[in-house]
Image (cartoon, rainbow over all chains, first blue to last red; front, side):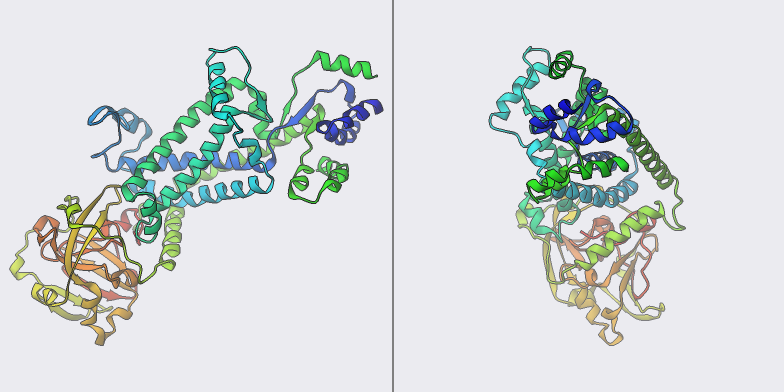
Length: 265
Length: 277
């Protein structure tokens, strides 16, 4: 036990595991046979993440109800005047119950928008103060590395992508981008909410119609992110998902590290 | 809770490394924990998460099932949300701040989007505008020529609809503030609100006084270079870049200065009463 702790203290990362020894002793667990759990997400990030999830869902849903109110000039997917389909096809509008709910859409959107903004600002301040943003900041060559990640994830390349800390290059780019999207959503949202009172903001974003388009495409971005995010989290397994709840992920059983410990003894 | 205390006490060494916030935050959350501690945290998180998720779902259901107040169409909590917004933005109202204006080449004939209040027949020559005080007492009546006798102002603004569309068009008419000056003896502009109603009383809007007196709030009789047609609200309508189109009442029949927040057609159907831009 004592030698175990001594070796733990040798490395910076392991230093903290010494702190769990007393609690381990409390419950009578034998530390040497234990797997450890590694901190992945701090409390502030976890709360911000889980508060954001229902809020963003409400914002997107109520936003689509507002969008539905004027279908005379919908955003289409296609080339020039030719649209393969318009956003959104009637089947989608019906399935989501968007029809004739503009008043409710507006009321939800403009009430919960404040909470979305407050949570986003709180997270931003938190991540600056704790310097957690460093975890998300894409490093040099992140764009190139992220191609490797995508090829690996699509099973087109065997090599495991490198990652520093929690995230690989593609994750860093995606998560940084999605936080930036949040800011863009907020700014364009205010620009189209108060185009007269905040005319400076609206004009600097290219005017009412442009700001409205950006606001819409950012929403599409959120939806695309959501789909990929869910697929990736499902792929990464329950332990990874659960670490967003507890903060910690249990290390996989490593036979070789056990034998190392055995040698120390 | 005990675990946290343990962690804190054993982390005094970390604190000595430096007083910055990162270290302070780090000591709350050790980088690694034992398996037993992990399962303990798991159970606690499961409980906290479960209770929070259940409370959220319960709260949201409650919000959806909430009854609207009489004369309203959205849950009371959402109405409070809208009113809170109105409070914020009316406090941020700046008298001298004007909406952007555009060039004549960008202007076009406005899309006709609502016929509430203008469906009934009207004899334009017999039309009269009635002005009332707070208790409904008649202060005066006007012909269109009375309005046209006031200074004529033209503005090319971007008209916005709650539905999301917008269109640039040209309005011309008298400033409402100039019209209110006709009743300065009665202290018309000192009231808190103005109410506008169509002759058939099918459509009605309420205005806060600061927005009504703004220099870009016009009693309009011309649109896009010609006199208003019936579909656009002849003979007299409101136009202002300070409010959504739902407030731009067509075919005004009467105007009342009042201190009680006037009824509003779309507000009673679930929209913001203020409807400010």
